[in-house]
Amino acid sequence: MSTGIVTTDLRKTFPVRRWQGWRRRPVAAPVAAVDGLSLRIPPGQVTGLLGLNGAGKTTTIRILSTLLRPTGGTVRVDGLDVVEHAREVRRRINVISGGERMVYDRLTARENLWYFGQLYDVPRARLRVRIGELLDLVGLTDAAQVPVERYSRGMRQRLVIARGLINDPAYLLLDEPTLGLDAPIAHQLRALIAQLAADGVGVLLTSHYLAEVEQLCRHVYLIARGSLVAQGSPAQLAGQTVRRHTVRLVLTVADPAVTVALRTLAARHDAELTVDVDDEGRPRFALRHPEDLVGAVVTAVVQQGGTIAGLTVTPPTLEDAILTLADPAVVAR
Amino acid sequence: MSVMGATFVRNWRITLRAYPWTYFVGTLATGVLTIGVSMLAYRAIGGGRVGASFTAATGSADYLGYVTIGAAALTFATRMVLWVAKAQITEYREGTLESQLLTPARRLPYLLGVTAQALSTTAVEITVLVAVASALGVRLSVPDPLTLLAATVAATVAVVGMSVPLSALMLAAGEAHITQNTLFTAMALLCGFTFPTSYLPQAARWLGEALPVTWALRVLRAATLPGADVDPWPAFAVCLVLGGVYLLLGLSILKPAERRALHRSARA
Image (cartoon, rainbow over all chains, first blue to last red; front, side, top):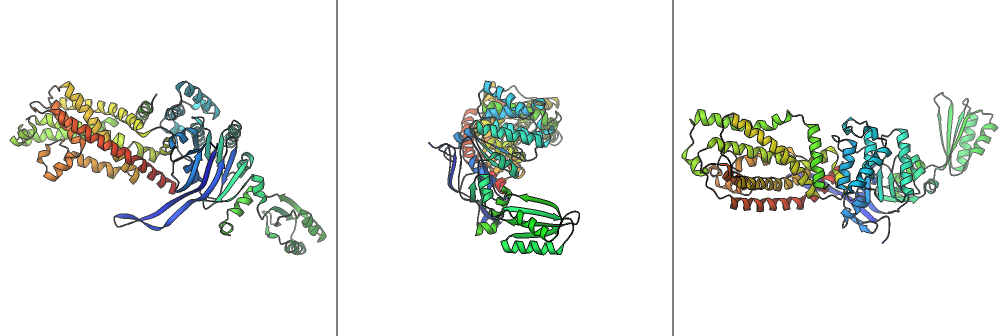
């Protein structure tokens, strides 16, 4: 039996129907939310799933967690098919979503965890200990007896995180888990995710905070329109992009000779050059090229007698990779 | 503790926090109004007498007892349906359906937990309603305990049986009010809560016969109506069979309804 969550040629389409008379009829071709996705989430590491809004990340997580049935392809969790063995799969996984309710407002944190522990059939003695551990972990011990309706958004999200850990899941699916969290709590959660992975839990993470992904994920899948467009480590993905190094330069005063020199340099290297002004009205240049052209840029400015007020070089980032690779035009190519 | 027990406890906790005790006034109002209006009509229009057709149809001339038991049964049916049938659409609306469906817990124990809590709440409401009727001057005969127990079981099976497919319909349609009010209207008209079903047109009577609540009410009448020499057990058996059929039908369509609800929220 293979371990991990493995999807093979996963597909999910949603029919487009409208009321016509007394019936809802299909009015267009079904929309593909996930289209032939094959990925693997092994135990003991954090795997990233990235893409722009509407790329199919949440739909994928809902399929992996048995909430939605795939239209085609398969998903196996430790060899168990998520459709045929849904109940057994649910014992092994859990989901933490940012911005979703997922807990009962009228119950306290302790009561919520107790109830979900019952639904997961956690043994009584273990549950008592586990609730205490989780409340402590998410910093809600002092508010454990307060109904959730009186919680702040961050406190509620921390309870959602505790709920997602109540069954000691072997696999944890995290959909924007730090959304709405204060920086210290988000930092704590990232440490917790890393610790869970070190303890053998397989984690799938979607997040708009790319620093979070770069920090935690060993392997990242990048999807667009439900299809896989790239995969690899965050560094490998960043290296795949066309836009690589960005040299940003600010001059003390505008100098037409310097501008001409930089345009000539950009044309010679086939680099992308943008020119504007900063908040103080000073000329600002950004030169993007696979190679680091900082030396040539500085030489050109100095040769023309220009004075540099600021200079930064940004290496290729994961954000560049997403923007470039997940761009529909690039995907279509 | 089982899923059923945990859901029972959870619902009591939520009820005690969500609803002030004055909420019970509203839940009792319909029953009290039904008894009060019937009492006025009986005394002011009927002169304290009932027609021969009523006695022939019910086997009793105790109209106020008939109406009081009917109003109590209607309160029981509507309150139970509101609790059980609306349990999952309430979870859906409050954003907890997904976290519930993520767990390996089965639906039936969950629904039975909701039912147990609803029974305990509704029992209090019915007791208060009967006490109010007594205060208004209605005198009920002492029921046969065994038949009353059978009637309670029958009514519970009937209402839960009807609630599960209703729950699936609500989830699939994404709305509760039209569905529940259609059922309440049909029950009030067709099941014989406040008048004998023999007064209905033939087609409506057949519709009423298809609802398990009609049969549960017959068992209840047999237990509580003086002079009504009716054998309750055939109606009891029919009620259990019909309620079971409704329950099985409901459970079979509940999962597709849940998937439909999840599809709807996934596309939102």
